[in-house]
Image (cartoon, rainbow, N blue to C red; front, side):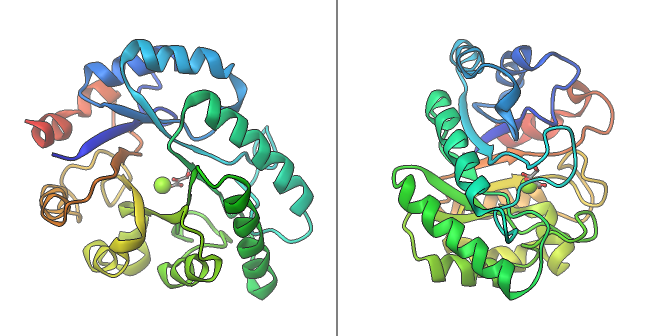
Length: 253
Ligand SMILES: O=C(O)C(=O)[C@H](O)CO
Ligand SMILES: [Mg+2]
């Protein structure tokens, strides 16, 4: 049976962050992810996870601007020193939270210079943190205009070029459906590189229930293929989080 994580940046936001861990555990999640855990003490987050009995599966590298603006800048030329300092910070937080994956967020950039900077930053980070799993995630540019990593072919090339054993793909099924029009076909092409999956319903990015992606069939496929990673629910609840959890009850029944 797949292991499900709740993205606490998007789910259970009816509650303060530290109360979301227990709410996720009560709902049947055994892991959580927090996109930007940098504004609360790591020890409080870790304690909340331990007392709820959930693992913290993933965090993102920090955004360049704490009060908004683009998220992440690993592919942005001209700020490599800053990337390195901020990566050190994510590493400290990841160690304190015993996090499994750090998602290295590419940011807004384009062209060959951005591709080179992204590959250089990833090589540096993979070597700096050989025991931490690093991920990169293609996102659709319809909703993330200007985002550097917006197709799977580029992600595959960069992972091959960096060639680090601790760098892999974060497969967001919602983005994949928009990028290729066929999430399952994308999955079949890149599955061997994937170390973390995120899900949301399409269209709308709400509960993974109904819509154009057949998630029960996807979960069966993952079981058949022996996928051992986490599947993280990264969606905006259509109403209150608690009213939209039938899908996980069915998936874990
Ligand atoms: O946008 C997404 O799908 C992500 O997973 C990002 O990490 C959100 O910041
Ligand atoms: Mg995602």
